[in-house]
Length: 127
Image 1 (cartoon, helix red, strand yellow):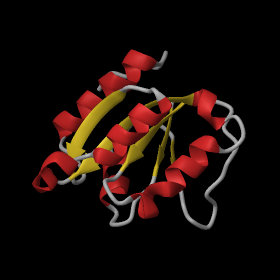
Image 2 (cartoon, rainbow, N blue to C red; image 1 turned 90 degrees about the horizontal axis):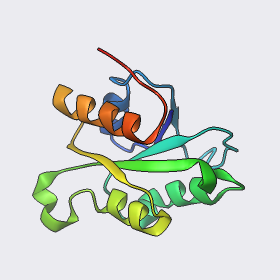
Image 3 (tube, rainbow, N blue to C red; image 1 turned 120 degrees about the vertical axis):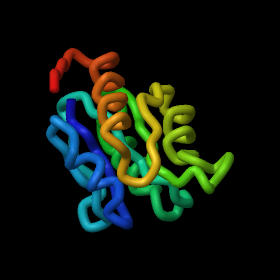
Image 4 (cartoon, rainbow, N blue to C red; image 1 turned 120 degrees about the horizontal axis):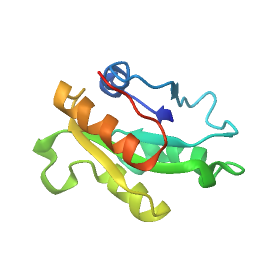
């Protein structure tokens, strides 16, 4: 399973670097890439103006059909806005939220994320 993510502060990148999956970082310079395999998105919590690139990526060509789940990063101090970007993506594209974590996540968050990916894909990892 490919992990697609974006980061503005580097927190999300630090999280995905802990994962045993191939990762692809979205950038404003290259917001579109044709996918040919299943992927999960890791989305930071920011206004749509900042994270709209994720929607652009998912909506590009046939990418939507490979989008299988989403995880959200954020700050619990945001209260009800904590991981709202991931929640919005899950609702809009009808995919499950497989994990939520604060900042760059803990080892427990990494384990939960891996289990979430395993639950929707045919990939299995042991650590």
